[in-house]
Length: 390
Image (cartoon, rainbow, N blue to C red; front, side):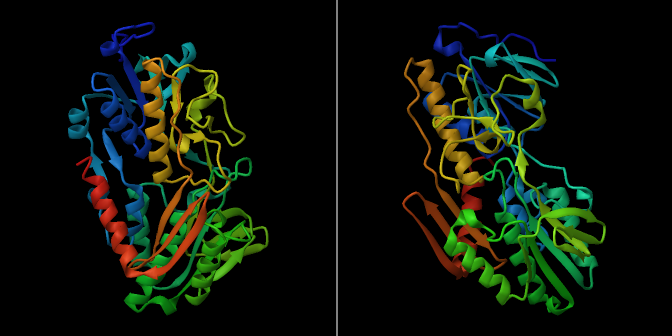
């Protein structure tokens, strides 16, 4: 059980201050590195079930054999030692005393500052969702997808995603495009493409709208060029083991990949954390949580001001986490938060052995056509990113 040796409310000695970071994903690890860089003497507690980091962008290659789970699940023990971090193997369950006490499955932990970077969760409202494989569900589902792809000698594979009706930004459709194009290309290289029908379905009339109009046109054109059946503007209503039912009817499917919309974690419900319409933690432009002193949020757990296309992706989570950590350190020094984040979408839509580059900022939108170099750039970025934590 956790105890209260870290009770820090009212401490004035900077060297005795402690910050709790909830999570061990992109935002959490960036927050830890930023805190340590700007406050070398700060105590840092990390609350996460396991001392490991899953590099989700690389899981797109597991089904077709380009990656193994051990390539992407990184033990964090050495990183935590280097950063002088105390890891508490637990899950957050609640928050009290205006954010100064975090309840966990192993007891309560006190803090002088809190950064919530535990990610969100996927909506599970659709009947029969258990019959679909979740593209960002971790390495286990990806191994199951690999097994199913090798078992099938032909048939229909359905790929789809939807959003959160209460919060349009709470969605992550990019990986579905990567699984779709990656598996299509893999089947083609195996000489098995003609035995399969690939179906793409989504409630959106223009899939990938947050990537920009040029990207939507390019993606739809690429799907049609690859002979993929499009069911656009069809809201998914139910799944069975062998079928997908949408607002426009049903179709048979031997294998279903589906990404639901996102919402906040269940433990947010019994806390004073302000919530967005879609269930995320409401933050300001400095990643502060309204009404709670020295409490910040970064990544998928939060709802942030910005353009409607602002993505839920690792790059954006890193930018928000860096701002949150710097602002929290500034508050300890009596300086009002001033660091913000740039709304920026950077995405390589991988297609097994080539990729499509999409960038978007408030200044403009750029789409570069499929090119082998972008595939290798994505792999190089993975290597460079993960070496920080190995």
